Image (spheres, rainbow, N blue to C red):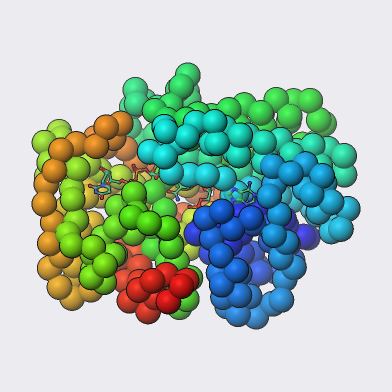
Length: 339
Ligand code: NAD
Ligand code: UFG
């Protein structure tokens, strides 16, 4: 079975490529390097031991995307490609809607033409919105609108896929709602490599640990949580990658629309993360409490029981392993893929 992995040079895509090859799938990888680089592809190939095909294509280009399906016999698409910085999306909504919606529509158009009916989409816990009770489970209705244009693209694409599955008989749409992916491959060869100053907690902490940034700023310590800092459900990226392999199994059962959380079911505070990372890198990382970040929710985590029941998948790696693996990646590659 051949899987088209879009955004496969990116953080989650790169780890998923490895798990797919391990599980015996053939892969074709596509990326336009808007947030990644060829070195990631070289390293994935080395780790897999397979020279899989790679195409540098912008998926918003309908004819280039269509050409992919002429060139390769694709059985399923795992669609990671997209712009993903929540804050940036607020100032660049047009670019976010254009990139994320058009890349999906162009893939779906090409799939319709070539009679490809299996699609796995990288959605996000953000679709549950601010009002949903925790833990989030799949029966929780999605919010009418999310807290950012980025989140709204996820919500809209979920609707596009549900409508497509209604219209095309036999179309399988798996919507995987990720919680907070962190960690890196145990080899330390691939990991998260954001350009500029990281927005997300884990890469920021890692850069403090490696001496590229001065100190961690913890956004708010007056939340109604055990230590006053926000709680999130951090999931190791390799566990997340394995969740996609499990989802392909579900597709083989002709699941139709299948919505599933990928999380651990455990909330961890920002302060606990900083402390765990300090243990991994062997020094106390400096931090200070600053004002709350606009739009942050105090606490959310997944109810992971549906994934376990339906996919036979469960996250296995804990917080310390996540931090150890990020530290291995960051200390071996202080400048990411440019090291
Ligand atoms: P990433 O930026 O590392 O990877 C996305 C990849 O897509 C990049 O390599 C980028 O170059 C590529 N890309 C973007 N637009 C493209 C286009 N038009 N054509 C071709 N390639 C394009 O991000 P990631 O963290 O690996 O996230 C993967 C997916 O998971 C994204 O859709 C993201 O929104 C979603 N997601 C991520 C998180 C998270 O915290 N990392 C959480 C929930 C959902
Ligand atoms: N935080 C800090 N300091 C930092 C960065 C983050 O204190 O320098 C805190 C945030 O306030 C938050 C927690 O660390 O409490 C996690 O923040 P992240 O930015 O790492 O992650 P978010 O939970 O805000 O968002 C992530 C993804 C989104 C996705 C969401 C839900 O970035 O794409 O999880 O899945 F939508």
